[in-house]
Image (cartoon, rainbow, N blue to C red; front, side, top):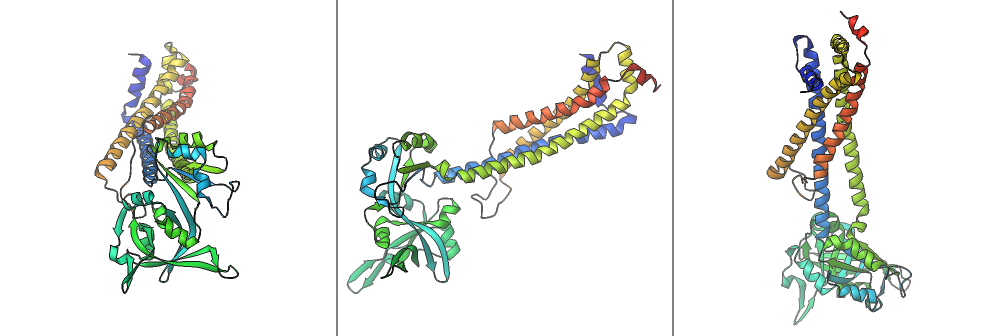
Length: 419
């Protein structure tokens, strides 16, 4: 065995007069381990939240959104003629593509919904039959058929139905069969166009897609009801595209965007880029904050090695008198620092792995209802379990170098003065 490594290992063992150094070594090792474990666990949980959010967004069937720009012929208040859009070669090619599972031409508007004394601002989308059938698969509550019909003698009139999200239904205390009033501030009636358009709808069903923001602010109705409400036919405000593979949405947008200069084509990542950017920034901030724990623990290594150097001045002089080089002395203390830090990094990584496994398997941490899931989501990202220990070990190496360099610069004469 290399004598440098042998001496470094011997210095790890506590003697009667070096109990304080042994305690300092243990604290340094434990501090680094806790710091590494905290970083890995926090990053794994935050990545789990991001992955869960993406899964929920993809499950909403909105993978690509196409909206008209003001340069489109016939553009009027965000609406364009549906037949003009459908006749575009790129749109026709898109609708026949094997990648596309569903294309829906929507007519949407912003409204104020009122139910009793409660009001809320939402977006109502008039959707086609195919899109409506997919939406009905996500219903958690649905009105009985007889609730939707108004019988006046022998005649029967069907109320216009609307599908609202679970969150909106909870906020406004609505159940299937309740009536709501939609008030459109942008659609005006009257001789001077100063009376908001008002229409009564019945809650036909309550959908649940797992995305609270959408469930709070987006409602759906058959496109015929929306055309009646806005008094506009043959127009559209957006096209929703559902892909068979949501991961291919970015390439899909790049392929068709340049052929549609008057339409804006965005995938679900771009639609939620601000949300993902904020989550990425939060993850980076948490990483930097927790990294200071490792840095502070590394400073403990500096103090421990500095004290050890003062304790071992006599032995350093003897080593140099016997022919030990500056590099040998420096190596002894660097190796000790690496042993302390390396043990802490390994301990922290293994602890993080066990904590993540426990969170994944037992799910003993309960979250409030505002979160998508009631338990902490965890991802096992190899970049975290390898990258964080590597960065921490580099910090330990830097911290170990400076006391070791100071020890290597001691001369035999300085040690002789201690005898």
